[in-house]
Each structure stands twice: as C-alpha cells, then as structure tokens.
Image 1 (cartoon, one colour):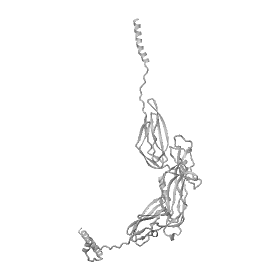
Image 2 (cartoon, helix red, strand yellow):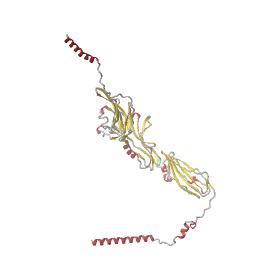
Image 3 (cartoon, rainbow, N blue to C red):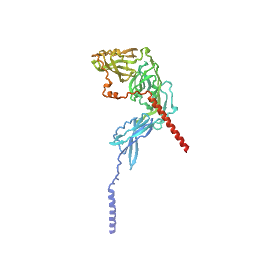
Image 4 (cartoon, rainbow, N blue to C red):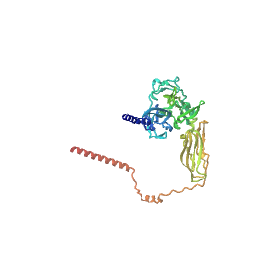
Length: 502
C-alpha cells in the first residue's frame, strides 16, 4: 500500500505542471512596425527632344494621403501623371510601395536648369537642390515613312515618325488626326509708293483644338534663316516686335484662330523695284493619337510636319513728278511747332521748333533749311525724335537771334514738302507763327584793340619782329638727312675694320 500511494503522488506532481502550462494562453511575439518612408525619384540627366522628363516620389510602407503639386519646369510642359504599385514582404508582413511620377515634355533642344523645389507628401517635406537637363536632337526620321501630299503646293511637305518616344512604340496603334494649321506671309497692302511703309508679318495659324497636336521644334535655330529670307535689299527696314510664343486670337474666314507672330517688320521701299518675299518653310512636331487611349498616359506619338507659306509680292509705284519736285517726305504728316517766348526783343535769342507728326519713315525726314533773312542769325538745328510703331514725331530746334525789329515771316522761311500716299498728292507744310520783334537796332560796338589788352599788349610789345625764312623747316630736314647719311657711313667703316681684324 505504501508503494501504491507513493506512485500516485508522483503522477499527480507530474500532471500538475502540465495542466498549468496548458491553461496559460500563448503570448504573441513582439514585432517592430516598419515606419513609412518617402523619397524623391529624380529624372534623367539627358534625353531626346521627343523624349519625356520625369519627376516623382516613392512612398514605402504607408498609405498615400495628400501631396502638393509638382513644380512647373522652365522649358518643359506637363504631360500627365502615372502611378506604379510594387508589393514587398518584410518580416512576414506584406507592404505596398507606391510611386507617383509626373511627366514633362520638352519644348525644344538645349540645356535647361531645374531650379530647387520642394514637395510635401503626407506632411513630409521633400527638397531637391536642382539639376541640369540636356535635351538633345531627335533621332532622324525613317525616309521610308515619309508621305508626299497629293498637291505639291499644299503646306504639308512630309510626315515622319520618330523611332523612340516611350520605349519602342508601335505606329500601327496610332492614328493621324488632321489639323487645320498653316503658315503665311501677310502684307497689310498689296502695293505702295516709293517711301511708303508696308507692314509684313510671318504668322503661324492654328485652331484652338489643334494645340494638342502640334508643338514648336528647334525654334531658336529655325527662326534666323526665316528672318534672313524676309530681308529686302531695296527697302529701309524698321524692325517690329520680337517673335512671341504667346498667341493672339484672330478671325479668319469666319473661324477663330490662334496666331503666333514669328516675325513682323515695316518696309519703306527706296526704289520702284517690287518687294518679293519667297516661300518659307517651318518644321513642327506633329503628334499622332493612340487609337485606344489609356488613362494616365500621354497617348501621343511624335513626328515631324513641315509647313510651307506661299510667296508674296508687294508692288512699288514711283512718286509722280519726282524729278521736278525733288526730295519729299512720304507719309501722312501734319506740321507741329513750338516757340520759347511770347515777346521778342532785338538782340535776344529764342528757340523755335518745327517738325512733322504722323505715319511714315521718320528717318527719311530731313531738316528743312531756313532761307536767309536780313538781320536774322540762325544756329542749329538740334534734332529730337519720338518714334512710334510706323511713325511718330520729329522736331528740328533752331536758335534764332533777330538784329532788326519787325515781323519775322517764318512761314516764308521754312517749309516741308511731303507726299501723302492716301491722296496721291503733294502737300507743303509751313509754320503758322509770325513773331513780332520789337526794339531798336543796336549800334555796332567797335572791336577792342589788341594793344589795350592787359595780357596780350605787353606780350606783343616784347615779341621779336625779325623776319624768318619760309624755307627754314626744309633746310632743317635736309641737314638731318645729311647727318643720318654720315652716321651710316661711319658705322659701315667700323664694321669693315672689325672684319679685317678677325
């Protein structure tokens, strides 16, 4: 019996710890949570002009809340966003990495500076110190892909797909959307007189709906040859406003167009030869559209399209009776004048300004001479010019001194002969002021004698009155020539004796 109880007590002692361990719930293994991480994703340092520059940020181990807008980059245009999600497993747990990418399309070739910027993602500020991006030329178009228009005079010359845009595109997935853009050389009048101004501009027109299909290509390199073709050797050229990438809205054939000013000048023909502007060509980037658009994608394939403007000729007519009339200013002018006094006295100087104001070439307006008048001294003129587009004001300022009293007939002393192209007639512009000079003629004062001057009087009294020969300078030159010949002879003899000694 004692042995039985001993075995029973031993079994009960072994079972009690097991039951206690079974009743205690398992404790979870502590794990350290992975904090969310946000980082900037920089873009490439180099790309093609038909490529895409990207900026983005990557969010790891968290949920995207709010984030600020991506910056505007100089030389690039925003072209949509893309998002990419990547799944990863850390310590047995599943996390999703989210990448938001902003796409930028370059306007043209060159080196662009990305200024420092910052983004705020879920309250975290991400800062970029900036960088430099070099945009290179596009890959050459495939000659076999060029298409010729049915009409040789049509603006479309050639369309070629680029080999690369977003990786390796498939052209069969894109379709050509017709545009309504064209380029033209426009003159504000078909014919002008010699010296009359004509405004000629080179413009690019497109419908507002065509802005997504076309973009300027290598504009800085294409513009100088176009300006050179617009130069006219037989005309005075007045530059207009510079080329602008900001269009203005115009009406053409009942439709609203956006007009880009590529060049604009005012020409004043110097001869009767016509002004001939040749056809000009401009290459643009033309996009094809994806047949099945995808959300978040650019859905475009870049190519080239060349626009051709037709030539323009402006006829130039000679001035009537030009040989008999002489030099005349051409334009729509009126006379302007101003005077510095309201009362005039003998011997007192005053200023008188006379000129023209209106539309025309101010550079061709010359100062009118003042006819001689007894007792009137004339000094000047000073020229003052205030140009405006296509004209302005030009004044000639004279300083006058009247030595005699009486009426000063300025309308008989000054005149402008101008040819008005609007009426086809010559006009004579005259002053409207006739100042009255008052006073008496002052007696002429005798000239002072040199001997009475306190400085020159004693100097003249002590001066040597001996007559000098007129040939004194010629004699000095002759003596100097003989001296040089003697020195050369002495040097030659010395050189000869030194050679014999050796």
